[in-house]
Image 1 (cartoon, one colour):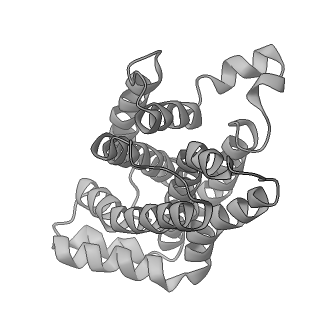
Image 2 (cartoon, rainbow, N blue to C red):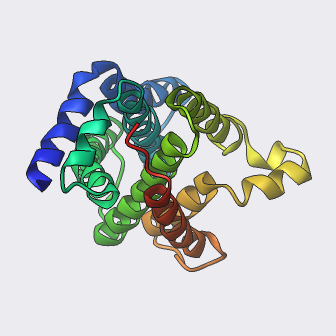
Length: 240
């Protein structure tokens, strides 16, 4: 049963090459745009410092525009009705979806890191890789569960798909990826401080830069978000 579900999720992933392009291509496009602004010997250090942000963008794309939207589509075409007649439970479906995409995220991180070292000369020799990978996987699980909750919470699949786009681009717009948080109004900064993107950026940066992971509320809220949206994803899971 588990192998069959893993195969299904991988087929869904590779059936939509556009999702792979955005999942893998968007961070590289951002890196190319950034490289035009880099000059001198410190370019490798700059790329190394922002590497976690590129990994987060890839994880969000895989979670929202791949997994969540694909789930909404399968709801729309009534495909998931067939699962009602099988031993597959919502937990099995969600867990295998996460596992099937972890390998994709690890591959992206490996390729991106290789480019950072080989092209820009970034120094990653002093990084705590086990901690970084562990936090990266927790971050991905959080975004995946948020995406699955949104894909299921609305009564119709089409409404859920529209909401996925709003949440995804909304978090990118005000999450510190495109616009400095420091330049935002104070009220908006308070909101941003409690967004999942902030939990991800702060926690992954702490693991990457080898600073105090438990500083502030970010890592605790990341774990709390996993528990909350994991329970909500299972509770609101819809087969159609």
